[in-house]
Image 1 (cartoon, rainbow, N blue to C red):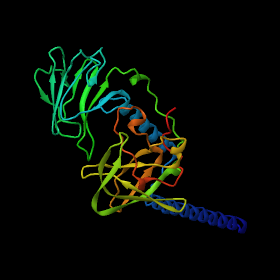
Image 2 (spheres, rainbow, N blue to C red):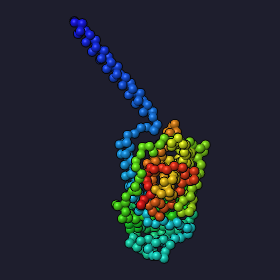
Image 3 (cartoon, rainbow, N blue to C red):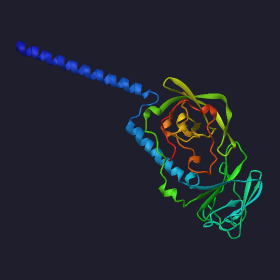
Image 4 (cartoon, rainbow, N blue to C red):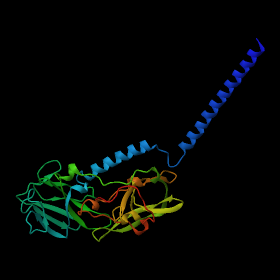
Amino acid sequence: MSKALSIARSHVELHLHWVCYQAVRVALASLVIASCLDGAWPPPVSFDQFSAEHGEWRQDRRERLITPPSGPVLWIGLWQLPQGSTEFGSDPGLPIVLPSADAPSLAGTLHRSGQDIRLEAAAASSFRFEDGSIVTEPVILGNDRSDDVIQVALGALGMRIHAEPGTDRLWLRVWNEDHPQRETFVLPETFPLDVQWRVSAHFEPYPEPRVLPVADVTSGSLEYETPGELVFDIDGEEHRLIAIAGAESTRYFVMMWDSTAISQTYPGGRYITVPLADADGRTIIDFNRAYNAPCVFTPYSVCGLPPPDNYLPLHVTSGEKRPQ
């Protein structure tokens, strides 16, 4: 072998060793980076994935707003029920007046005794149960926070007894299955989607769950159960939100207010749900999913208002805006 060929071969071998070294170094670096990402909090997410998941959430939210019985867009009436008997129908002189297209002059009577509500249908009415069978005798309706709630229909109207936590008030809630907005409803505008508002938070439990009293839009008050607070940082400043959850809850429920409520979002604040904390107390608050309370879409609602401790000294430019 000539000396020149030997030198060239040595250079090739050295180059191959260098290439192999670089490949190993890059592979090891990739493993280290992947390991770091696996342990990162919050877990990283691409904007495309983030946007797709948010779009699915928005579509689901629209469906929930227009689906009876919980869709507030369809609600047409809410009447607080006193103790004793309350007649209702299309007669304008009755305490509860329903549309004449669906209800006879006297549709029936609701008898309240304590927390029990009994429906006694008038002879001219054709109340139906959810399975389509006709109501032929007086029936205890229960309420939508009990295990024995019974929903009835009259024409295109649906009815059930509504209750809220921490109060003995009961209401008759009525919705219209054929509401014109059921097909045309459009969600409110949102702030631009921003991954920066997907914030790491730590759940700090109280020694024992507490009762959280809050005001509501009817000038009454409600009571929720809170197990603790969500603690997070924005621009180096620590903030806290009181979280609502019971023993059977699958997510935290939060009522919050921020300075966008002055001109851009609902003045009464917004709601947000947050995944339950993991074993290390970690969770993620995605403010892009801050949403309007039902009372933004209907006057026939009993919305709780954010407690003073949940007033954030922040301009949360994320989530749903105030409808036009």
